[in-house]
Image (cartoon, rainbow, N blue to C red; front, side, top):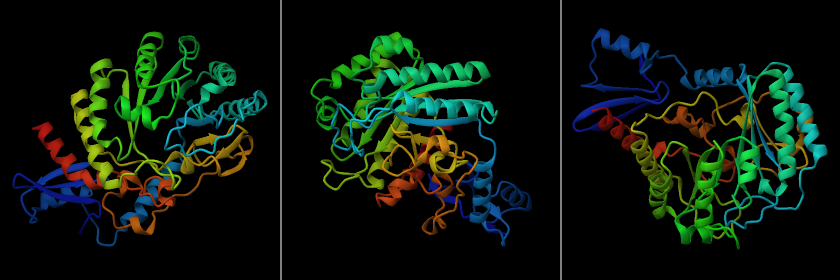
Length: 394
């Protein structure tokens, strides 16, 4: 028998603990001498494994099985345009004024109809994206109405999601399109936010008012995205507290992100993964306080759905791309994509000895390729997270 690669050992208040990142198990131990009953428990729960077992190979087989098996939902991110009426300092997209046409929309609708009628999926999630998608409202409404007709006829669930800067989101659109959630970005408190999200007509105060409209004129949740960099990291907790105090947490969800430099001349300073981890941990504490519960990190059953699952990003021209962060890597039309042909997952060499691997499965491929750091924040804050969990359950 040998100890699992995925065991994370730590001490707290003179007690020894082991957390296994692959089985989500946390145990307290007195020493490393175990009774037969304890050894059997450790073996059954995979804290200890057979000497000849290759945990990395086993993890790869399990993940690839999950990738290949029937999935419940088809995920499509549809960029209605790459153009935007903002000039955010961290934007990665190559902006042009092309709008998705109804001809391209019809091609997407036809493909969706064909896929859903094969009874592979129980639902479909459409993420309306850009650029700024609301620069092309007519095609958004056209897609929404036609996809809803298909799903109503077949009897499966359709959910619409919107990522927007908010400047063109009207009460009328909120009432017409039944968005499940709307992602809005706040990049700090008022002065910092307005400096990083460059716009001449829609600022922090207007975006706060927009949240009120969303609450009043729709059932949508607000996905609060924060792009965290050196310029705003000291304001992020205060920003979250302000939002929660004003709107509560019932219809607010959080989506903190480390702001990545896609261009060397981007006018902000990127945090290291470790620097970001400190802020992300504080956000987790605040969110747990809001929700009244503290949860352990959970191992991932699949990697990013874009390269490995049933998630596809579609450009305004109808090309199926790797993901919304790489719209320039166009390969083929979505209409021609074989959704049954899925990429196989393998662990990168440098990740094979990492005991945090099940929590991130290698992280974001784009960030890795940019050499921006792809590790999950738990790698640096896991002990603090586990101690917070122990305090919570005590």
